[in-house]
Image (cartoon, rainbow, N blue to C red; front, side, top):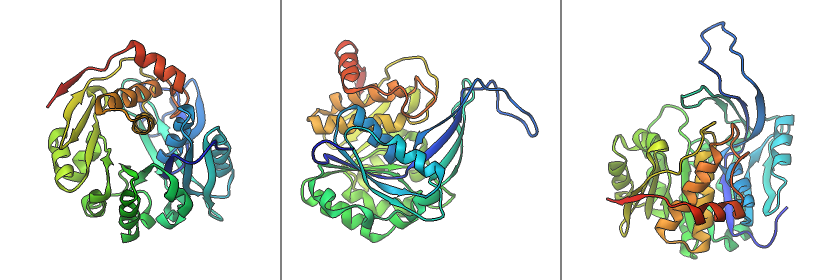
Length: 320
């Protein structure tokens, strides 16, 4: 359900995640490794961001494609939350949603085995025009996993959204071995905030230093580049402001969805009129809250929890 008009459109990939509680090591061929639990949870950039925005009380319209199987039913049920409108979801016959098997190993980054499923059918034309006309922010998440979006119509949609005063955010998921830059470059002049992580930035730009990555994307037309670097913090890079941030420390259980939680906090900050430093603090707090659980959304702060945390904690930053 939803409350009020859609202040944000969250469009892109929707997934069902099957993940394990962290195990001691990754199995070798033929080996069985014991885990304390396996969970089925909501995943996917667009769905995670929408559900996290619900916790932050931001009215959000969710656009994407799911299938008609039991996994798809689970995804839709999981999104039955205040402030989220799922009437923009499209059901694809004889298909599954995106599905990821997530292997969490203690002390290591997570591993994924994924299929895009119905996400491959999602196109920019699936976003209701009346939603696009009223929303203040458009978040496009999981780009590169949806071939129907890789068309000139997507850049034109972003251009029109910007022209009427909306803010656009582009987030990636690297999928397949191909020249990513050729696909991303046409969109950047119409992207207000480009938000890759540093691994994605390297794969797209060929540059290892996040500052060099950010400059590369800014020069290509992005209004602002925000690069997350895991435990090394984040980078905010625009013509007006350039700085690095630290992190808020907590017990790390799993990193799945932390970037999506960061994005939800960032969007909430934009809608609240935060300056860049407050934006990054709010986003970093949401990202931190996510890693306390094996799922992508299980421990993400509510609005009240976020406000209380930020009132007591300060994010360190350094000018570039």
